[in-house]
Length: 628
Image (tube, rainbow, N blue to C red; front, top):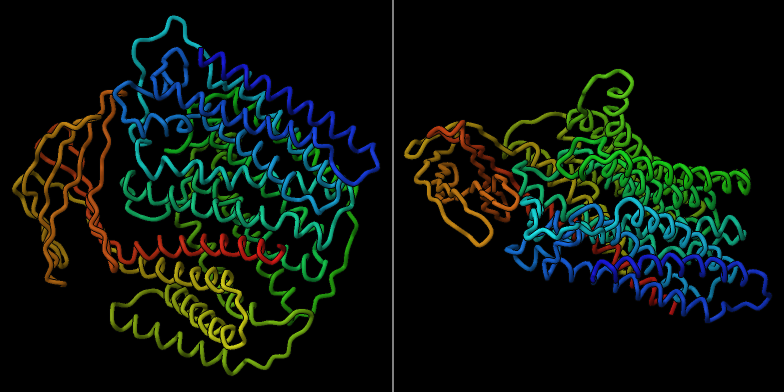
């Protein structure tokens, strides 16, 4: 029953998209400046029905309707309600339906919130967005249907992957998709802008909010995934350059460059075609990430099951999207010469863009290179943290200095009159770093430079905030974003240099001593929970340096549906440091492999990213107030 409702709505939504495109083209032939209400009504019905379709799938998970294949594959009647609901999008088919929801809702919202802009521009945006919707609905209906039926109906489901049964991961995909898929609307707007010659200040204002909101959700979505990986996968860190982590980071770089370029387009009516390229690139990279995750060509804990047909469809769709958008771009492209003064805000924003594109290219190369070598040379290699650290860190140092100076520079041309203040801030940063160096321990020259440059950005931004308040100017979002980014790099640098890690084997009753720590394996217990059984170890940890004692209890969880073992970290988080421990049994013996880590300032890394995301939301609401 539910499967019939879901499939019917999907087919009807396909017809609605086709009707919107038809009526939109008819609307282009009419001379009046408003869009016919018929299109608004159809778009509203389309959005409403796709939401009902999604709730139909949720209902299937809640009542454990195992006649639906997606429910059978990803749920179980004994699963907690929360994980039944999150299982709706915790699989390939359900997540694609979530894609279509966001595509559809953003299409409708763009239509109703941009009434002051050109009619042709809005109509072409609607047409392009609905072409994307049709592409994804076809993909769902004929390759990845969440309402596919199993006959005969199984009595029980296979269950949701245990590592996906987590609150952070439950909210991670929706947040990330709002960023990923949200970029589709300014992809469509960029195509419409090229087709209608609607450019300059008006175009920048029409997409600015959409870029801000997708960037903010993308940032917080990446953070949710990072926190989940920290305590669920046993990695013990904030980022591991996993290929699918990288796939989420690529559009973020493009979005960040786009946000800054839009400022130039809005203020100076410059960089129009560069903004268009970034709009096209952002959504293209989102689809590239989807291809990498769903084609099965990446080896990652995040990837969905290997299915070449999915990969082929997305690759064809991606190719058509790229070639179609590039052909329109090249037809409309006009060569522009930008004569920016080297000491102007425009130049510093361009420099910001060059850094972002460098990071984007580096991460893309590191992600794609292992695939290329395996396809063409049958060699399996991995590109890990050493590559990214070697290539990116030196550039980050330079980037932080530019980021500190750029906001203080005026438009068009500035006078170099703040050199003394800049040198004083730099000297203060060096002295603070020297204190860190002497108080803790020695570390590399590169690490020193990272800390100096991040402290320089923090102090410079704090000074900017004081000056803005004195002049009664309130660019709060930029201050928070830059200050928080400085904090993020500072705490990452401190975390990297002052973390400690030890790997060893113990059995119950034994003690391991190293550095300033003593770890005793006190006992082992088996407990039953609603959804799993757990082998729980208790460890007594003495930190002689800080004269503290604490107890941590890592777990080995045993799930029946599906039959899986997971290793759950036990973490004691504090403002200054985290203590982190995992355990795993060695070949069914009395010995357990123990991984212990001390991670300083982890909570401040998370807080810094939350503040960065918050800056985008603040900018969004400030911009809305200014227009209204």
